[in-house]
Length: 97
Image (cartoon, rainbow, N blue to C red; front, side, top):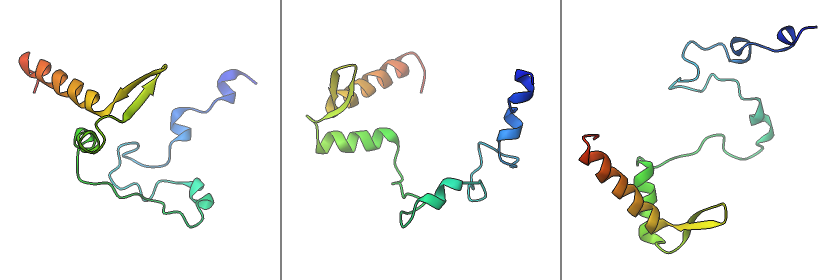
C-alpha cells in the first residue's frame, strides 16, 4: 500500500458541514468525547468581554501575581497589561486601529 493510499485527505476527516470549521452553531458537529464527560457540563459560559478586558480585570485583582511563566521567566498580570497598552499605542501611531 502506498503512503498516499494510507492517509486520509482533509475532506475525509472533516464532518459533513458546509461551514466547517467556521460554523456559528456547532451543535451538529460530532463530538464522541462527550460520552466520557459524565456529569460535567458540555458547554461553558463566557462573559461578554474581550481577552484584553479579562486580562485587565485579572490585573486589577491580582497585579503582582504571575500570569504566565515561559522558559523559566515569569511575567505578572500588570506587566502584560502595560505591554499590551504600549503595543496598542504603537499600532495607533502608525495608523493601525
